[in-house]
Image 1 (cartoon, rainbow, N blue to C red):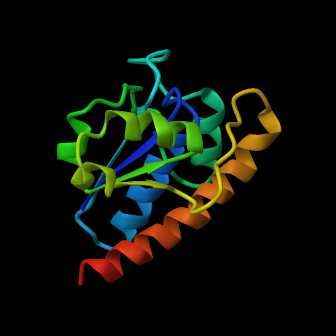
Image 2: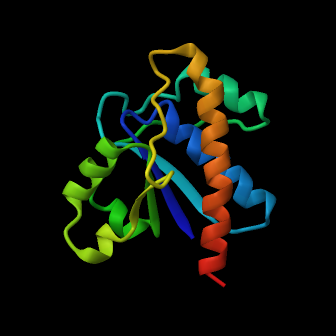
Length: 148
């Protein structure tokens, strides 16, 4: 199973989602690959935001080695699931999809809800972590059930 987590800049939400999902999969002995990307090119090559690194570390997850990259059309072929953080990310990714097979891979991480972007509010990083973790647990269970 290959999962791609997508947000706008790939420095706050999607690095957390990548780290959390990979941690959960590894803890269950699943040979899953998780990556993350941004729809924008603002932070390519940069580490995750220091506040994301800090909140992940507080939960025993090290995301400091990640590097931001931009989502590309090739990601449709490389990943089984593309989980986006909000509706704008969803629209941006879907705009690049060329066929139904690609479109079927794209979903909001939280059905009918968004993961708020904590970039402009330090106080949001901990609740965003908790929200992502809760929904990664659900996504992992759903994907395990589908792949039996």
